[in-house]
Image 1 (cartoon, rainbow, N blue to C red):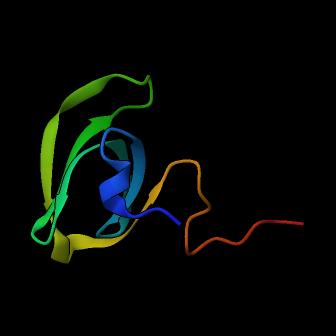
Image 2: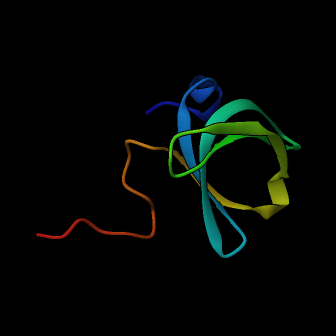
Length: 72
């Protein structure tokens, strides 16, 4: 299983507050993350810092989110 440090430069999905944000992970440390957000058309915007205390979870875009179960 890979760690968030290994995901730098890759697309991730992040739970922030009551929403989810998709973007390219640019930096990760104990203070928080820097994410270059991606809109629905795939356009990348400027980088945004999210403090660690606002993040519920973070995963690579290709993984199943922790609060969802696959349907059978």
